Amino acid sequence: NINGDVAGDVICAGQSININGKVGGNLRVAGNTINFNGQVARNGIIIGATTVTAASSTIGWDLLILGNIFELRGDVGRDLFGSAGKVNVAGQVGKNLNLNFGSKNNNDKPLVIAGTAKINGDVKYKSDKDAALDSGAVIKGEVIHNFPIVPTKKSNLSNLGWWWVKLISIFSALIIGLVLISFWRAQLIKITDLMLAKIGPSFGWGILALLLTPLIIIILLITIIGIPLSLILLALWLVVMYTSKVLTGILVGRSLVNNYWPKQKNSLILAMIIGIVITYLIFSLPIIGPFMSLLAMLWGLGGILLALKNK
Image (cartoon, rainbow, N blue to C red; front, side, top):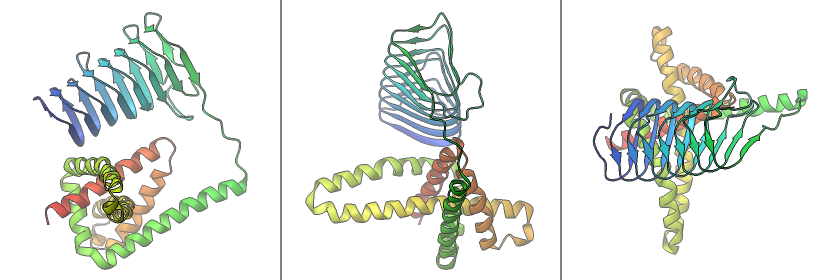
């Protein structure tokens, strides 16, 4: 919970997040349930399964949303954009609304604009279903409904190629996991234990690293003397981001083995195989897959940084 005022940026992650104070900088949050009843001076990034912004809430500039359900009751100073399963707009958007609902959305009305809504620009949305627009809503621009491109029926060869790519990604992750277990077993157990014990801080550090590392790389590239270091940092960053999802898979596997096969709880290889196969199959699902992959990467990335911090 954040109930006081923050002069700078707010970056946090957790299962349930409640923000009631004023934020003088930017807001970047990720969680399962997010309730926002504050005032942000600049931009907002909200990644959550269910997010509700109160009527008194304000985002000074732009707001990016990613998740399943999002409800805007407050105000956004400029653009509201992103991707979600369902969005309800009852507040005010200073400029444009631009949302993507995917091609396989189970909601009959993925976009609902209530009679209290006021949008000072265009409403653009991509969905295979129509939006529900209340006659009392004020939309000063155009309403543009873009339909997703419907893929043609795949041939057996195309389906085989898709599954082949997925199998390669799973086997690659299994090989990385086997290498990690072979050389860093103790450290691996320590990191995954830390990820489970400190879920919120892990996500927070993961978001921080995801946002700051590219900025540091760009700054180093600007200086001639920093180019070699920036390339090394870029390579290391890519390796760590890939490995972080493997760590999350191992953590999921350890949890499943401990709960359902307690006699095998010391078998890290079994946990790794079960966890990676399950998580990577989830990553392959439409719409929710990329979102879960991002969360897994943030969780694992934050766990690595926490382990280094506590070393």
